[in-house]
Length: 296
Image (cartoon, rainbow, N blue to C red):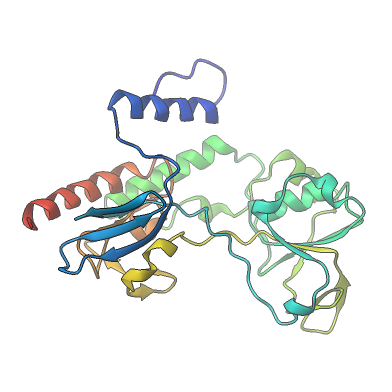
């Protein structure tokens, strides 16, 4: 990556420009604005047919790298159909001014939940922040650089097959950025236990307590976006497709199918820019070997 000559860490624009120049330098044949709708095994089992909005492409290898940010997760709770207010996800949040004068329940004990709750406090009539377990704040002195170093050490340890649980999660879940810190220290950002059901005008807790809500805002993360692979009827392990323990990015059902960039289940820290390098190299090597040993 070109040297970042300004103070602090490289900006998002700097990183995007680097990736753009990388693609141009190696003349990579990237086809943008193509939607993969469905992937099926070919009748003879030698490869795949990928149906897209620009026709069907056949290949002997498919590497699925659609990411973990395209499928928002919103839990279902009893009474949801009767709730007269709005249910939104983090991806729908734009500005606190949209919620001026509203009673808002924010769900989620991570960074998004804490930051959105803190952002809403000056504008909304009331903000109730609910979490499934007590929130854990990182030490105030921990910033982005410290998190990067922690994540880097964990990636290297996992790549060396070291048994480690050290990482960002070992310190806590929430980065105490200034707005969150101010709201927390002022006693305005206090988490409550998760409610158990919806009512017509709000939410209800297991002990019978209720609260009115105009909006429930779910800061509950995402699931891997793998809808295009439904036709392959992949064996599931928990919420994700089962992969080869020797090469976590390879499907156990189809040797020519690989997953990359979704999280630790398909390669240590593979959903991060620094962590994806090693899983990408091993995946490409395995894909090449598959092509050489499975000649049609």
